[in-house]
Length: 478
Image 1 (tube, rainbow, N blue to C red):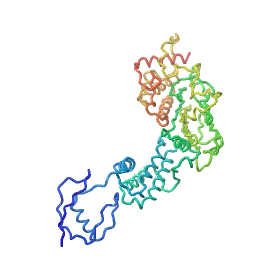
Image 2: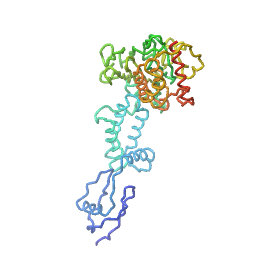
Image 3: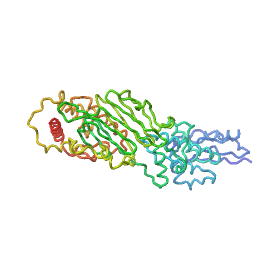
Image 4: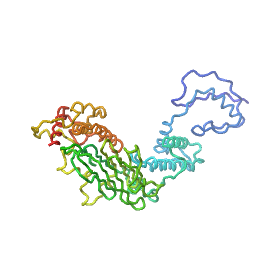
């Protein structure tokens, strides 16, 4: 007895074709054996019998065209179905894809893509996620969330250049963690406390003649001739030496930087780095380029531009240091976890990055507001080309080409050109701003404007700023 032909509707979805149906082919006789579903997962077909395959082929011609779901949809399904609506999936009890996804989120929730070691830790978590899905693959063979997870893992591993083989993250960071990776044991502490907030980081920078940005985002222009400590805590010491730039001027610039990474348990012995003008090495004083276990690389130097730009990455204290030579002088930028940066004794309170320059060494109001010196009386002596080659207008034009935002870095550039006549200070201010964008943890604080120390634009006119710069330069040359 022949069954009547049933009309099968196309599945719903945004990819269903809305055009006219193609001509239908005569339906084949029904298969004596029950047909198995064509889809068992995301893109995986069951192995049908020959009769079922023929029926499926004819049926496919009758149905509107389907397009595969995009990656974004699969990832959305992964997290929305797997995490938010796991109870609606009616998964078999033995399918543990929900647990795999929850563990992955737990392992990566504290990671920050802006800090060193992110890629390594993220790849470890991905490999752990992939291993978990493999262990539950048999039980989850027909599960949509499982196949979405597999596809998402593959794509993320490609994006991050993760190898399939390598170390994996432990789902119990309290038991096993890398003691020479600050982000790893910081995450373990957060896990124990139930704290989901990542550790906070601080930024400090020094450039020009010289301009200082402290850990509190205060911006100062200082004299500080001679050797001064930028940082001096229980983990790191940074000392800079400044020399006069122009005879008869109180403006100085940095020509020597000494950095001491203090010994830290099994992670590294004490390492000293020293750079002077025209000698920016890509190694520590002892000739090595790393500290501790060479495989773990808990401390390493990376040369970005020979003789001009090096980076130091101290994974064991979550710290990154950039050192550059621009023209005849050096610049420095550093990012460090707040809890480590503030770990120092009372005797170590003279740190420019922590407390700024001493009042006697400042040549502005302490927050970059050079226009505030308008209250000072103008000297009677005239300026006889103390800064040859630049006027206020030409200095503004040159700095504006590199820094279209007229923030404190732009103003520092103008000041440096007028006080030194050295065009290299334009590049120094520009690279200092680039270092802020690379290392400062809060984007809304990248720019500091002359009329405020908290990053809010000021309402003063360009004329006031220009007059303020002129007065500041007069004071510098007194």
